Length: 80
Image (cartoon, rainbow, N blue to C red; front, side):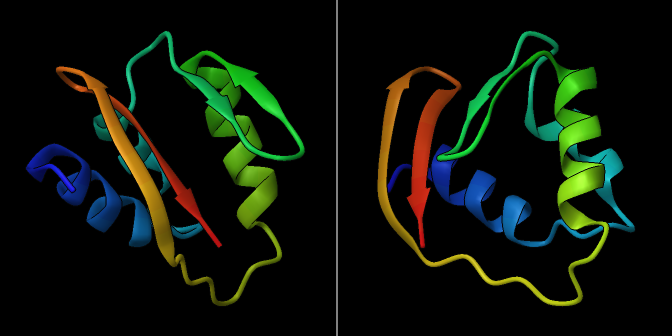
């Protein structure tokens, strides 16, 4: 895994409902975020999605098993 994706994965893993402001440092304004249930376009929409996603979560763990850096500062992670 590249250093860029490693740092991103570490920061993403720390997210919880109390620090979702950190999304601003992880994603650009024109983020396109896709998971099995949703596709979200734009940072404000991503904030709304994560607020809803984390509203009833008390503990969460990500096991990253796939990754690729597709360009400088761009990539994807897969997790279980």
